[in-house]
Image 1 (cartoon, rainbow, N blue to C red):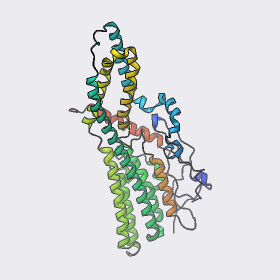
Image 2 (tube, helix red, strand yellow):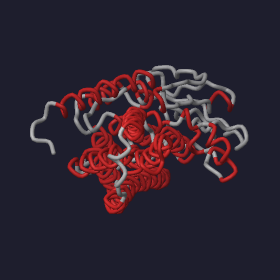
Image 3 (tube, rainbow, N blue to C red):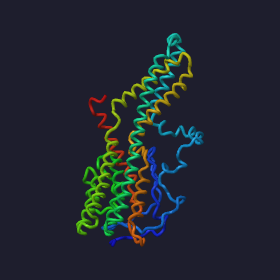
Image 4 (cartoon, rainbow, N blue to C red):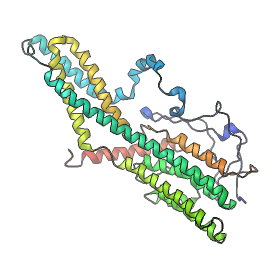
Length: 401
């Protein structure tokens, strides 16, 4: 039977309240939450009936269907342009282009004969090559985003299969331990990816699922997700030894070990996306090509446009720079600032599913349905410092293209 279980939170709303996170523009807001009690053995909550879909707080706007773009949102899309994240990222470059266009217009007024024979043929030819570069850059970024989304979908599926198979073939006294480890895995993997594969973890988010020795072990290793998988295997091995190799037997244990091995592979594939960016030479060449193209474009158009060259070239530059910036923005879907993939709802979904699959039929106290999340703000500050260190190291690296 399950020992050392602690039960509280009598209402469904209390059990399923989660923090709201908004990483865009560096803003973070948290909803009301209650921290679970800290017990040296098993952290557990009283299982309650999940709220209806209308009552449930998904904690992230990315999963809400009404927040996804629709063609009827065109008016709001135009009105929100000044607050656009992409516009903020390219604003300095746009200012430079506008200054170049204004200078070209002034020179055209003072010395009109200089631009009388200006031709746009060179920019037409260069624009074709530039368009191919931008398309390739954006497609590469989106393919990496889609791969990250697919990998995390597999993480959810594999953990559910482990929980379901364990509920039938692993002795019940090991369910709490297995459930805690399975619930901790997605949070550990998320933290590991957010830190840039450095092994830096904000342990307050998942320590409610693990004992003190496990937490210390994870903080000392460079591959925390793999360490959680090793703890899962150790739990299965201990269960087999204690029950004379009958529960689970060799065949059942091999199947579970295969699923755990898939978690290791998925963690490694997610790490590959973080650690292997788009080649720096390609990104820098595209940026340089685009900058030179937009800065010189006003001098080819000023003879025909006059002072209208300023808004015309600014609009063209905004479109080109935004496309390039979007490709960079989605290149790393596990970036803590951009947060292109909503990992928090996925982690919470895994926690709820595991708790429901491995919960005792009687509904007795079991496992927490949410992880402690008090360190979300500190998490972003920690990874911001790491990102600053990376940028400083890149600036001092010789021989970059």
